[in-house]
Length: 268
Image 1: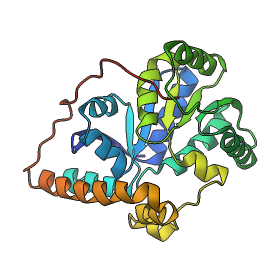
Image 2 (image 1 turned 180 degrees about the horizontal axis):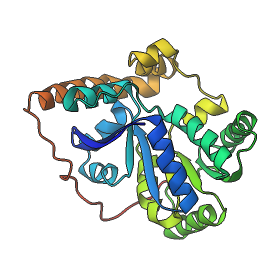
Image 3 (image 1 turned 135 degrees about the vertical axis):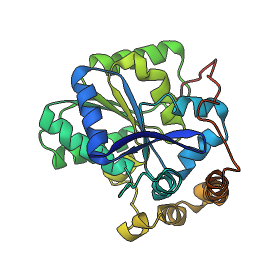
Image 4 (image 1 turned 180 degrees about the vertical axis):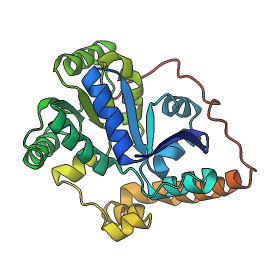
């Protein structure tokens, strides 16, 4: 089990942690009905915080920021000599948490995506883990929520009896959601993005060799070129450039330099 704490990667405090330690924290918090905000960030997720000081603040309030992408793991190892042997990939983390939750008798809530995707996701999870209890699920409205809608949703999640809530709204909306709702639902909120689509069978995952070599972004671009080409054409070179400068100590972004958001518009 590896849990070395958090380290500054371009101003974002990323957890040097492995699957076992991350799952342990989530299950314990779920059993204790204790708030815990968890996300798994790849390069794009880190760069959303680099380019937005308010979002940097949000990310740095998370209890766990797992190194989802191989380049983020490489950054922890290269900058801080963490020696992590593997990343903590959101879709895999999702399955490991669900497996442990099934064994521990901790039920889950699913929030985000479409109703069709949620139903497929829930069905596949229960097939894979027959003892898993799904206390509830709610599809996204794909718009900003009013304060009344936010409070109603928080009550639904909290009163469902679930011990863990998975959130699939895409980056950075899911992180905003987890940040805003953390202390309203009293359970772990796990922002896992594409895990919903992957495990519902709606989106293909990159081959293992591409994942191991940090090329998952390339696979996704070939599947959704119009939506994703600009994202990766800008964020990947910027990440490498800034990381090189941080390694040379020519780029310093303090992890406490973010700006606390004053007004939130919650997407749900």
